[in-house]
Image (cartoon, rainbow, N blue to C red; front, side, top):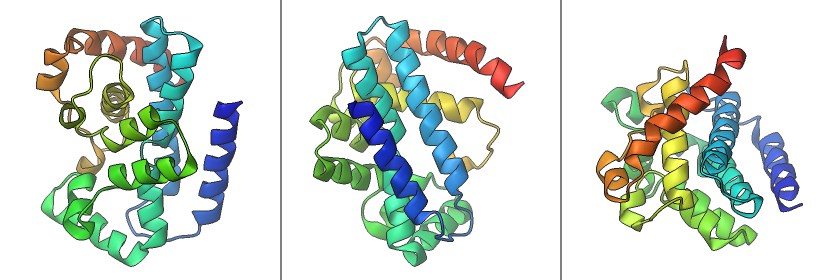
Length: 199
């Protein structure tokens, strides 16, 4: 029930803001990426044998991980255009360009929003730290770690070649917490599952 409620809310938000125009920012691309990261996060949880009570929150966290981009692009489109342009011109990752313009990134904005919505703290924190799970000192299959890897996997498998959209893998952190050897297993499993859809 909670998953369905979140999906309805998220779809409603997208429908409200789809008319905003920021050059170089695609709502379709954002939706497809967020959905894929949610599915990949759930797949990782299933591969690791987690129960549904833990799998569903990881799916929600993955689905919501970039909701802050939607908030920034629709709430302050002129400033977000500056961030998109800066990412392209200076070859920055989007969260870096956002921080240079706003003093914060979509990850923190999304985390704050999810907190206002009353979503569980682990989901909000996972969204907030998905680019920097080491700063959160997240251990094990914490949402921050799972979303971080799922985000990287989706960018790696995506045909979208925008350098500023891609995600870097925090290998030292994942190695320290013992998850780095798992990453290739997860990537291969997701790749096999994605082949019919991408082929």
